[in-house]
Image (cartoon, rainbow, N blue to C red; front, side, top):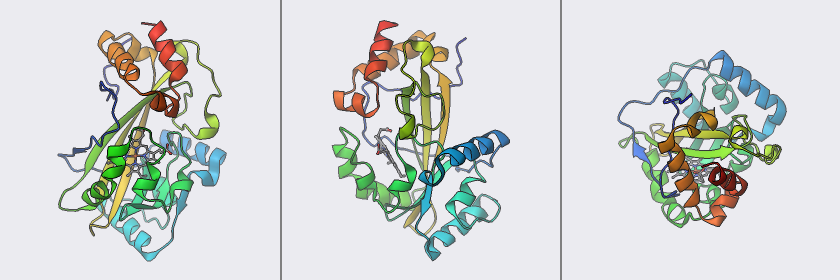
Length: 252
Ligand code: HEM
């Protein structure tokens, strides 16, 4: 059955250009549901300290206090505490450098390893990202600037791993053979200035849907195939989409 409520940010050609859009409405963190809390606890049980890390400082405590007050959340003194109160995966950046992160549903990277790294360093493994890397300083100062407000971008991929977490250790555990073995994964990523023009919050919501629920929709199916066909070899490797590209093209 076609599901029209799926977040489907697929564009042709595929691009890593900084396609951020200014949010018109105020952003708010979502108080955590039982389902997401159970999922976050399960991931932390499995991957423990890979998923969260922080550089402790008064700056971080000040940021957590501002965030708790702004979104009416219970007190928290660590990024893990805060993450367990909200549905989103979250990170805090200072002058473009990650000072705290708790991502229970990361795309293919280990969250704890990016603490202390700059926006530019984090994005170095991304192929075809010259423009993104060149604009790193401009983007991070823009996204921390309170007078500018929040920005949003969307990310998508296709994977054979049905869990929201795409932790690298799960890569290629299931070798897909058909559309029925695949999932459409999308992320809604929001940046929110914390108020001092230096710190920003990065909040990510992940959605997973069986690819079969999209495949029946001809327009979406064509967009997906055309977007994947437009990716460079390096991008297909990076996103682990080479085999998936052939499955999609053979299932047209
Ligand atoms: C202007 C906002 C941003 C843009 C345009 C951007 C762009 C991208 C792109 C194109 C990719 C690779 C493919 C994809 O998943 O789309 C990526 C991956 C990634 N981004 Fe961003 N990003 C932004 C903000 C951030 C922020 C604030 C963080 C901070 C935590 C971040 C952390 C990452 C990480 C960890 C990866 C995976 C890198 C790896 O494979 O090792 N991004 N980003």
